[in-house]
Length: 166
Image (cartoon, rainbow, N blue to C red; front, side, top):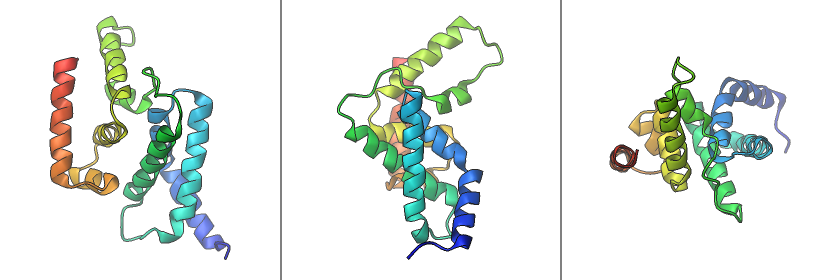
């Protein structure tokens, strides 16, 4: 049965309001612009297919992140080649943006962080993306389907690795 117009309107409004999530996840998992666009379209399509099951009592952004990350991780696993170490992680750069655009030390740190994040397993990359996007441990746990304790442990280990390796 085709979806009704009200449902299409609600979905379109929510997708427009939270489109940054789709773009951020796609940018975090794809270097190439065409691949990013394709992944963003696949995420939007999967969101639409899953929308009838969305529970309005829950936060839309959390639900959206979970689906977007699952699609991105599936896409990453489906590729025959390993992810490129120079994956564009615009979401991370946004959090590291510095008002002095030509600071060579800062640029070196950002490049090292890109490389570090690109080498992370998909779950840890998703965890870091959500953390850098200021989600609570509870929200991260819900999106990734792990416990809050597991979130805290994994983040603690990731932070220690970042300090040690960078």
